[in-house]
Image 1 (spheres, rainbow, N blue to C red):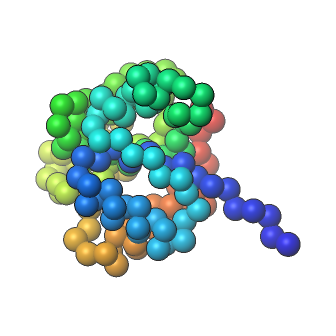
Image 2 (image 1 turned 135 degrees about the horizontal axis):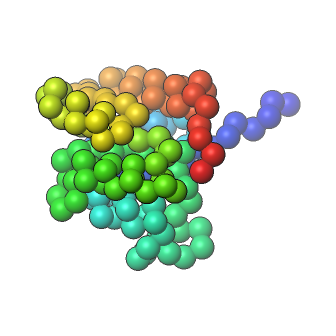
Image 3 (image 1 turned 45 degrees about the vertical axis):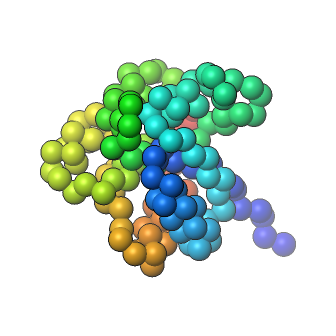
Length: 149
């Protein structure tokens, strides 16, 4: 009997409900053993990561293996969130992949300057979403050595 596959926790910071559904469906269709948690903006992301507000209770905010971060969210956006994550000694090693509709070189360069581990442009069709989420999971969960947080 094969050993059970580890279940990975992915935290998605995304304000677009359609994109949330696409990521959720694509991870499932790609066969990724995952638990997807979702927050709708940067402030909620930092509340989750710092176990504040509605995330303060036991088991409410387990540490994610990977954060998928949209750049353009209302209020505290992805850039500000990434800046705060990288400034926090407890969170700075957390893998953060920016997932944005923008392919503008300014957004890409700024994201890497702020400490993004990767920058991906959101696909336009379902098959491409499945392929992208499969590639992300294969890299981060099968090949990369994740930090101990």
